[in-house]
Length: 305
Image 1: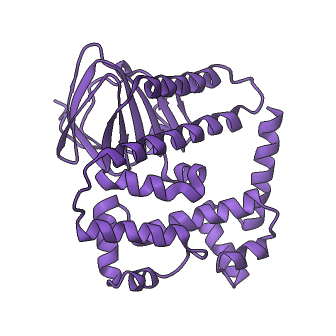
Image 2: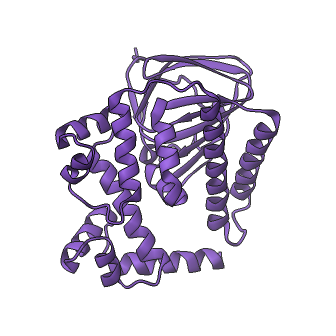
Image 3: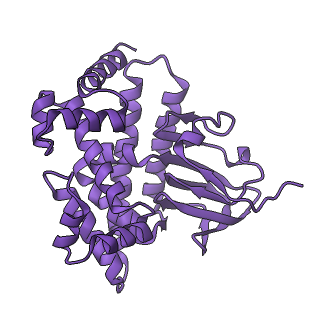
């Protein structure tokens, strides 16, 4: 007999292979439009960010052992690395689910990513009750995404899809900010204050690829303690966060600016061009010049499609 209590790890890579469940998945963005397709849902470890809009019915579940309830007119926002289990669904449950990789959120929010990171990792999961106009707006976003999925022949489809999701993320960040302002200020733990401080330092650093010890020194803590609180509050190490931010800077400056490979290397603190080449190959699988060319080609091909 199959053990339904076995934990299933689900990442964006796994979702990319689940064609019977997802309506769309490109490795960074996934859309699941019908919860009825998710039969016999097992406890899972969600290794991606996700946004769930409840458009009908209700459900209860536990997120990292915290009981939660989601009902019509509410939206669930969750950071990555969250354990979900103990589900109970009403027969009329209707959900619209948007799953996002860390990389694509970093890319889309860019300089404003700090708002998402600090808000998303405050509670790891948050449920917002939406006024009618905000609920209607989010439904429109999903309808626009659905339209683009059903009309694959349209020009600029990928760019438009990304623009819709990016706009949706900004509006959701606005909703999070508004919700946070209405809450009674809580007494955050010292660890959470330090984690937020680390994210702020990292977000504003001109050169993000620095040793963990540099960031720890600015927070007056040890590198080991900084790594511990990062893992505790986000499921990702300090080095993991530094790498994520640095990768986005590399991708952005190579693919979306006129800077040469050498200029990007110097700008991001890689004074050795050979080491910069090795770093890009390690994290992107190609050389800096190929990555830069791919970015230009991808934009050109999307414009033609």
